[in-house]
Length: 75
Image (tube, rainbow, N blue to C red):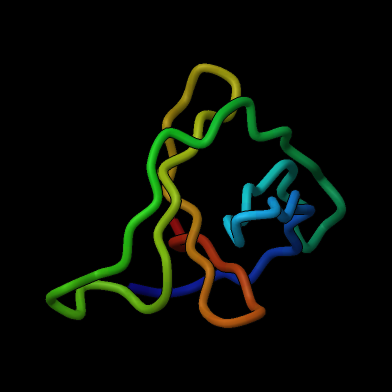
């Protein structure tokens, strides 16, 4: 998987959970995350860090957090 690193505005909850709220692309475009559907860590090494399944507009996409960096799969 080729990674494209992005900036993410997050909400940090009292229980330690991180909720991505907005994704900022390298060229300045932004997308609001309408909802976080699921968050999980890979048990088989398929990806690094935490994978968030998010709803952006009407599309379901994956957003990954690896430490303090965020990335998406390059198209």
